[in-house]
Length: 266
Image 1 (cartoon, rainbow, N blue to C red):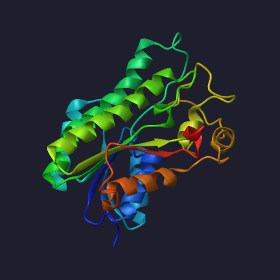
Image 2: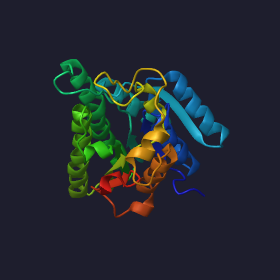
Image 3: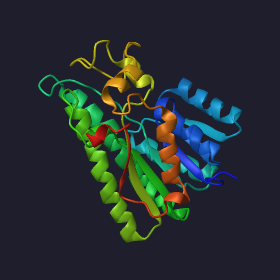
Image 4: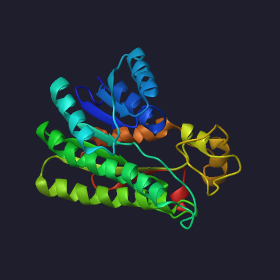
């Protein structure tokens, strides 16, 4: 029996990368997973991968910026699964560039997806998880939530915001005694499709990590940036998510799990 047998989990941004890895790992431990994204093709592929491995999953299209859609997603889960135990707020984007060159629209878009989405998921997730008897909320932040980086001021702002938002909500849940633990995970260089969206030669001011062509080698970047000398993979982050979602972390709330190959140790 898996560590999450009988649990219901919701993972946003699960059509690829860390979100897909998280959904697969949660399902492998026995959870029934609802995955959401705006990429319907990728979402269907994630569901197919989970089902082929013997797990249970289904997909819903969701723009995490839309408050009405969050309400619809939770209503759908209540109607079909009847309860929710685990929420993984993973959906996010990265838009790079110096502050003086970043448009207000790009700034607002990054804030909306990376922070508003986490806020809305948590706001409506807490009552649902509390009604089920408790569980876990896991917010995906970044090493950029700890350390500044030139050309990533906007991204750092959002990920730092997720980090402290998580701590505050963890204390609110602890005071409410609703049996909900809230923690953040901070990945370093992880080999996912996001690096395929950055132009060759590094991270110029025109960087838009959510769009573009396949050009950068994440493993080479990991060799340069991570003290361990290599990039991580989605399964490395997924293992942390499973831990924080399971009873093994019953006494862990309001903290950060850094999975970065030593980057933050510098």
